[in-house]
Image 1 (cartoon, helix red, strand yellow):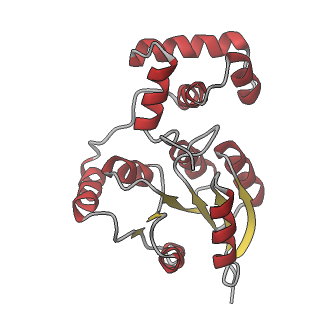
Image 2: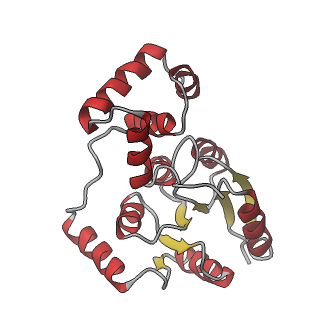
Length: 216
């Protein structure tokens, strides 16, 4: 029997270790990474069959990583494994190309079920996600009325890094941009979203699932 190749992305080491132990008897774990940029790079290099990723990850959040992965590696299946049960997160995850959505507080056996179903070509949503949330998701997919914010992917990356406390030189180095380009984008972000202080950037990033409200 074919062992499907899985790439795992989460910035919590204990969770990575737990998932690794659970899935290795059935699946081939090709790599585990702890931030969104590393995830995209590893996926392009390793070309896994299935990617398990969190929403709130450093450097590049899971939603934006999913959009990029869905374009560059459309054959790979994506499952969000996250603490967020809010309708907007579920909806945005599927719009980004996810085929499954599992809450971290679910039983481990549920993740294995989700992986099997997604690899069989189906979709999976955790039963802990409310019926109203699922109905909203289906309606949004049918009508196409739920939209992302107006920011470009580059601006979203910069906004997240600002919210994480990175200075302009660090951002320029991480994204291979000039400091002036970072300043230009940051000024545009501030105008478009009316963000003035670091607290404004942080609040926006938390509300839109780019970073977690608190780390454990």
